[in-house]
Length: 269
Image (cartoon, rainbow, N blue to C red; front, side):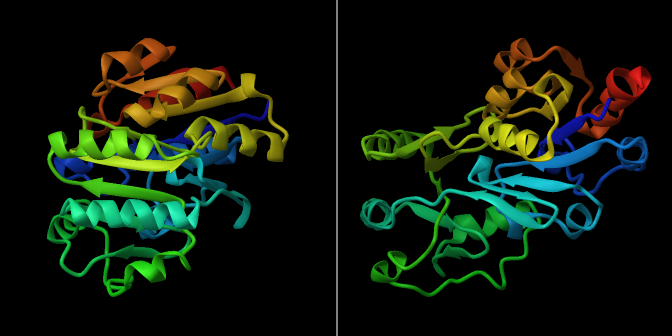
């Protein structure tokens, strides 16, 4: 029976916070074994496409659910893309700048952030994202010409709480802040989630939900872990996420994904 397996990146495939920015040999072997057995493997991440490492892009994944489900790519083709309302994005950017809050405009395929956004630069450097080709010079009127799928704000938690409430009042927008991981706020269109992106992939490739698996560790993985056939949480995840999962595996630094593949997927083939 053909299966489809979805993998979060940060904290799941990679242990970026611990300096592990590459796939371990054991994880790569397990992923190759899934492919060799005829199964599909997909990335499901909050990252936009330009944030993905070359190793991930070139590994052989069958597709990508990116920007928390706002863009879904299968076999190199976009099968779904939902952008934010342009005028609303401009208003939110105006508000953020009035509050001296740094932000990233995440689109597919382009990324925009201000040249004086030093906290954002440090964030990119921390996760080893090359931002040299991102658009740094633009004015607020330009924003209405951009196709944006996600907004990310970075500042102190108190300020973000204020921004969060302001943005939630914008029709058609939703967002989440993950205090378990970063002092950031991510905003996307209503009904855009990793789970919805996963379901679109499954429909496109003709795999039943009961034959789907997902690995994750973050707040934005909760719905995905809950809705696939078998949800698998990484040990470093919050208790809330672990309660949604069928199984819990070791941390990324300890090859948790490989353990899960070997024990709960390949063992049943």
